[in-house]
Length: 502
Image (cartoon, rainbow, N blue to C red):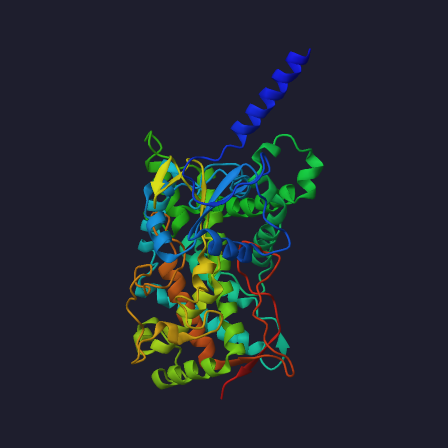
């Protein structure tokens, strides 16, 4: 009996040692206990925790959260090198990703392998054909800018939250290419879909525990998933998907093969042409997921950056006034600024770059996954490790930014007031200066990056040409992040006074 007990204890010790064994040559960091690992503190923002770990462990940090190993890359050079590796290009099998993708492996953002490659190529090709990144797209952007200015004028003269028309203008640009649809500001349907998307991200706090400990998913009771918000997210995603399905059905009923109107038509035609191709991954389910991805990306990222812009410009009136003076010197007051005038307004361009830096919309980008054991910077990154770029930390690193927490466009200007072309040691990003870090580079680079830059410049220049922004009398401007969205940097809603310029 004693022998059996000792053997049982020995077996448990060996099992404990095996389960808790740290992989050899893993980057330094936090390991913790078996099963639960070292869970993040709920009292300290993850940004602050990573900043402390960076000081202790360096620019590559391992952190076992639950049973998952996370690797954080914390400086520009490391991020650039890491995300250029094909072994680091996959998306992880996180439960939150699965929920947001409606338990499928389709779409653009979260898919892997052949499905991702096919969808990325198709989407990039057809959005370019439909105008993305080209001058002719500016006509649609200019029209939305006119509508945006008109709506802001209706809100001028009294304090209040920034108008919803920002979201509508941004979404209309991409949705005209995708579905030949544009929405009015008072369109209840589009407001509902946008709120569902935002509230789904807010519900992410509860679902993260299933990401850290995926073994919980099959064993937790139904009421726990409801309590943590998992089922609410699923319900909201389903409503969005149903609306996308209505768009597709409308297109199927009116499809003219000789005259494709938009992205949906192009997808339906190519899906039909390739129906006998064994390598085709196209399906209605995949199209719905692609549409949801484009809707989510098109409705929140740029609109949030514009909100950040107005909040910061209200906080720094001297920067606002200098940008307005530059616009006035280049563009007649009765004509809206255009993207062709961008080179004549270097200060405003520097303002937009600085706002991207301060906003850092996705704090860690969208997580990647290591597809096989990979040597990197002298360490072994194990297969299945979840990879994250600490973008927010890079954007506030005092080693690279003279005033990291202030709106300081001079970060992006040379001594002659021209936008810097490059700076040694920072990340190249197409036409963006070397030290500006939007989404991580590499194979997963954002498809809509050029469109987003065009929208931000045109919309912001139009608003600054026609309005000034300030805090309500007797109040300061808060540029805090919305605490309800831990992984996205959305501005905390505040009241702003919109004043018409004369």
